[in-house]
Amino acid sequence: MKSSAQAFIDIRSLEPRDLSKIPAFFAGLGEKSRYFYHPYDFDGDAVALIGGQLGRDDCFHLGAFESGDGQRRMVGHVWYMPSGQNEYPVLGIAVIDELQNARIGQKLMLRIEEEARARKVPGICLTCYPENLKALRVYVKRGYRIVGKNGRGHFQMERCFADDE
Image (cartoon, rainbow, N blue to C red; front, side, top):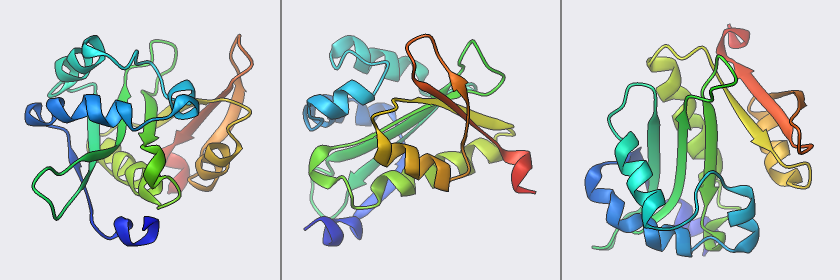
């Protein structure tokens, strides 16, 4: 199912009409996924926070949606917003547990990077837990490099788009 589901995923900018799908997306994240996915509390306030960021120039949200049925369930989310500690915006990403390993996360990463470049963002930073080896491998493959650790021992990573030229 995972590999066939991959072909039926539509990735696009989140819109206000998508906010009602976010609680079900949050519910599709297991305990481990929630642990790695921040800064959300997985409640109505988190949905309101996302809604307040839609349309801002310094933030961007993409959703991955199943296509083919009337509900178009949200199955993935990637975003960037100002980090406050780095010249690059910070990125966060999650895919519901049921569809992990279907390359949806990789597609979301590619699309958010394309959007950032189109908006003249010079790069993206993120935090990765050392025990999240799968994500760490994906980020390194995408060109992110470890630039340090934060106070909790999590890897600080960044990707400078000028390095690709």
